[in-house]
Length: 121
Image (tube, rainbow, N blue to C red; front, side, top):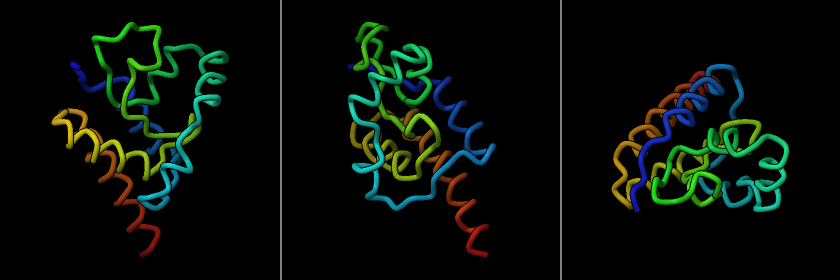
């Protein structure tokens, strides 16, 4: 499997965070916050595969462009970036040695951590 950074997904995540569309949830919340297969299918039906792609940090070039399986490392719920999703993506990308995806997720995590500190301070 050849997974590389999805630049459009990364840039969208950065913009969403900068525009206040993020959730500073806990690390283990992703299993509850991650969109279900039904929600993914509904989103694709309404917005198309191009928009679906932008909610993922990785792209598997070996998968067809019209398949959900092409897009890896989701980070949000189609409305906002979730801290738990970014953390999950960072950990999993590191496990599989997808360094560019891991680095992008770490950058997003840094942005979210800075916001958490600002809110606490």
